[in-house]
Length: 104
Image (tube, rainbow, N blue to C red; front, side, top):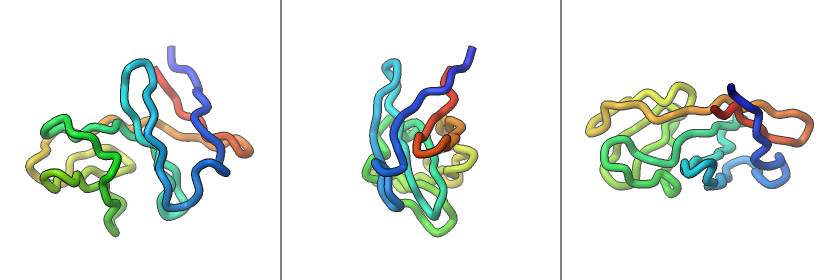
């Protein structure tokens, strides 16, 4: 059954920042971009490299710094080659100052 996990506070994640975390052995990236908070798997599905240093483009896609694969931050969908498999996206809620994700 899914559970809500508190990962950070809004104070810890100002606009434009990101936090890399590990939950149950899974690397995740918590991002605050364009007034929205996202949580995605911190791995490019093309070659398993981390996305921690990736840029976010104007279409709200995270761009793998290694080979340029793009993933939609809302859905995880792979938007460009060489990636064809989506990245995992975890639903985020903000309760007061706490940033939570649905996990499991």
